[in-house]
Image (cartoon, rainbow, N blue to C red; front, side, top):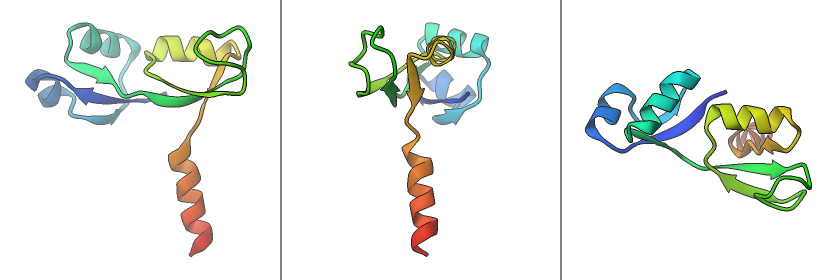
Length: 95
């Protein structure tokens, strides 16, 4: 899974740029911990009543590290809300 990042330093901009990147868990951790990048929040639908970020069925914006996101998705607590894909499909239908 990829995340979208914003570069916070010149080093971050030089090595990573800004936008959607396919980093390893270790590379993501290193860049975030060093303060070179930040994760741009994305929308998730809360699937479980046991997840405190929102009520079940609610859509919330979260900035999750890949490792955390993967665990929450596999545990059935959240799912990504991929609006760009939905917008692209709508554009194709209207043509």
